[in-house]
Amino acid sequence: MNDLLQQLGIADENHGAHDGNHWLETPGGAELVSVNPTTGEPIATVIQADEATYDRLMQQAQAGFEKWRLLPAPARGQVIREIGDALREKKQALGQLVSLEMGKIRTEGEGEVQEMIDICDFAVGLSRQLYGLTMHSERPGHRMYEQWHPLGVVGIVTAFNFPVAVWSWNAAIAGVCGDAMIWKPSSKTPLCAIAVQNIIQPIVARHGVEGVFSMIVGRGSSVGEKLVSDRRIPLVSATGSCRMGRRIGSVVGERLGRSLLELGGNNGIIVMEDADPNLVLRAVLFGAVGTAGQRCTSTRRLFLHESLHDEILDRLVAGYGSIKIGDPLDASTLMGPLIDEGAVDDMTAAIKQAKEEGGEILCGGNRIDGKGAFVQPTIIKAHRGMNIVREETFAPILYVFKVRDYDEALEIHNSVDQGLSSALFSTNLITAERWLSAAGSDCGIANVNIGTSGAEIGGAFGGEKDTGGGREAGSDSWKIYMRRQTVTINPTSDLPLAQGVDFGV
Ligand code: UN1
Image 1: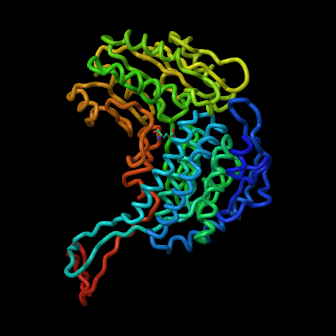
Image 2: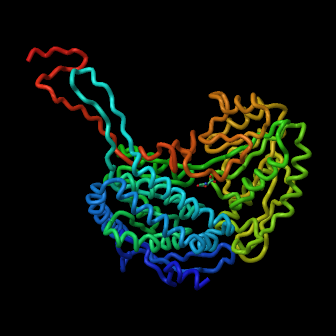
């Protein structure tokens, strides 16, 4: 473990503020201990930043933006390309740190770093494709077009469950768009953020692009609130709970800023009578048990057609029994711990409520005694009258519903407040097309014969309803990181007015 930390520049005591050029010596806040969820033991400490430090960072970021925005976008792309290369070199080490601090298994930790590499590649290409449209002006000889300019200093607030990838989704794209940024990582995973900052620092120094990529570890109630309410930040991109998103959305909205929100999901898989049960099984196991149910895309609800309900459920319960739970760094482990004791308590409370509301535990249901925040992955036979099934509990709980037909499944599926990811398993073209039609899934992501989690870079990622409406990591999501300017140029010696208005002068 010490070798790993050393390789990533993590000391016993670390400074939680980087101004895009240096670690600040006196961040000014209280000490934060990062705890290994597998053992419950401390990994290292971080001195958090206070509000004065935030202001210093903000000044550096503004100065960084002034210069960065004037570099040609493809030159900014070159910086992102080198960040991608550095991540390739550190993929194993950073992936393992993610496993150590967050608890996801090794292949998922390294997969998360791969996701960072992928978004860097995507952004490099994008740096030559920040296209605007040209329009035909109604006025003779006039030219009309739109161009996209960098926006400013972007605030990036990330959650513990993807402690490095979600920063990169924003940073790589905001970077090529010419924005500077201040990253506030989750206080549960500060070491991952410190390691990322150390990885990119030599590239930043080589290119002299100071103040562009800064990072601050601090309390949500001080530094977080300050960032969100700061009028110098035109865009806040935040990932987290619906509760947090509501707060951020209203504070940013009040000052007429932009927010990009990626909030809770309550993702369902509908399985029709003509589905391939083998695919269903694999997709549900990865979706519901992978990352110990702590992805915003995790599968939380399963709708089984009555004709294969019993068969799939039996096989699923057997599959759950063979999941190896333990140290996420051990190659044979399939499920690591939850992030902390608070998450275990939330899971316990959800299971208790499910039982009280008539849910039947088919397997799991308990925490695992001993060191670390370990729990049993749990399947609960549910019915639509239960309130708990409408909530996102960040834990491996799967609620299973028996359904008569597609219409019933869809109706229950769409009846929740969240709208992130969704999947249908069917080999019937007509059912699949109904699912993908305007009257089908109401989520930001709708899959067919693929589970709810594990989306790839390139598609716009995000969801509807209480999931917050934001889109990132692909397609034209870059547009939110830039400001659009509509330009009309008159090269003639006349001044015709639009709409045929005659002003008489
Ligand atoms: C998240 O849980 O916040 O689609 C992001 C997925 C991952 C990203 C999840 N690519 O599961």
